[in-house]
Image 1: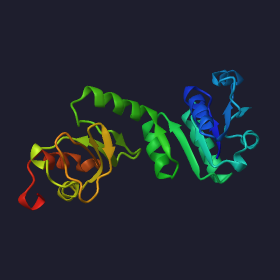
Image 2: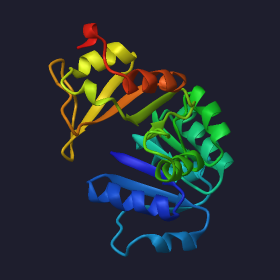
Image 3: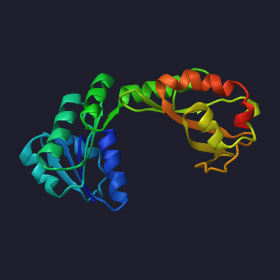
Image 4: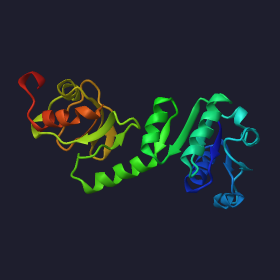
Length: 222
């Protein structure tokens, strides 16, 4: 794949190195030529000085043959404008924009521009470490409607099938951490002692789900 990155900061340069190490062709854009000093001396990709939503700059970076575009500069407006230009003008389907303001991230997510809201993500990571276990989701989509959460459960659920947990809660068991290894549950997967359950669900359902799992399963759910 050929991938164009706007922003040669710590995130952009790290992405460029990882992508190149994985065999991809990379072009990186930054308005400050000094920013390219973050790239290792052996970096083989293109270094393009300019603004990421300028048509000539994008063409120099090879946007017409790109399969993906990533905007990770320090400016929300620049990131979202350049992502829209890449998609709407040059037809790049796979675009991602970093957004610091989570309210903007929600808006653009609804418009079909995938975003990474760094402020919301960082806050979630901190909250997960300072609040009691299970109080904050592992992941939340930018619109705030769907979460992936590690949940606690009554020991009485041990011995029931993961499918029964889903039927009782209305959530999906995304994966189970068992003795340090993750597994995707099948219909016959049984909850074992020590299993850590990770559910995906609507965020407004989490209180109800936690309440269900805090109690014992009914006879029908066993």
